[in-house]
Image (tube, rainbow, N blue to C red; front, side, top):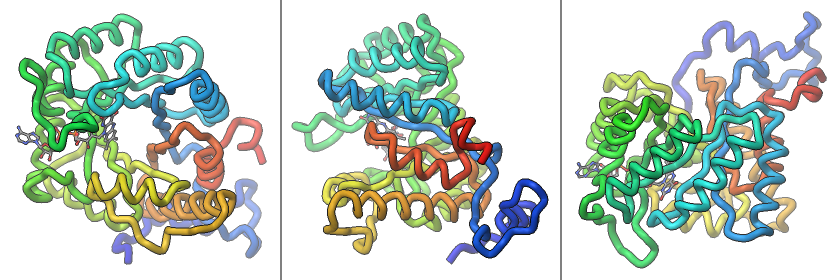
Length: 316
Ligand code: FAD
């Protein structure tokens, strides 16, 4: 149950998708947002092999015409992909028109080492960092700050601001970070990151739009005013997602599980994510961050439904 009332303008958009003044026919009564109303961003991870690089670059090239606000590249758990993240970010900066955002974590490095990575981004013209504490390496059961390193994401944000006036995105958790003492403590931590200089929060993935909307209400009530962008994960691998969700405290409704063939799985994934975005948009959300898993097709389709299309397609 969503509690918000649709603003009149938005409600009228939802009722009338016609752009030429024609009244909508029953077949057109679809909640399609207008293209200039929605902004998207895409997250990729750095490839491990030449074949994976080809897959990634096919995805990047396919999604580029959708004109994302930025595209981000993750930093492997335990700080394991420093070089590969850097190379991918630099290549996006050099070979595409999309502004790159480099993920950077505190894990396994001294402040000097992290600062050197950030400085090299600044020197190559990369101005957007997604600043994270990071998850511990696979062989460690819990996070332990590196001696001489940044302890938490808020410390990293402070350090980054000393290097340059980066645009900084940080993580937020609609269902709370698993290590947080309470939901309130988690919001206090988000506030600390904002006080240190963060401009935007991107959320962990979630599946119930109401969970996000309640979180947003709590954040606004706590005085947090920066954009909080929902992280959308189209689920093509239920087992893997459920495993990851357990670690990061996200609830996955069991009804999302399908044992169908991969094509059916994709159709379910696209429909669920598109519906999630539609409900969020109907409740005033107009920026969406997609966890692409380095594949373009589902995100492309969901964006199409959201009215975010390549220039030729948007004329239709
Ligand atoms: P923080 O904001 O530092 O918080 C982590 C926990 O520590 C919270 O429970 C907080 O309450 C607690 N805490 C904060 N400050 C203190 C303090 N002073 N004393 C005690 N406790 C404190 N991981 C990667 O490894 N690489 C990535 O590229 C990556 N990208 C991500 C992108 C997004 C959009 C999101 C949502 C997550 C991403 N993650 C990534 C996962 C993230 O690193 C983990 O969720 C990690 O466990 C927490 O990171 P954080 O930046 O939220 O940490």
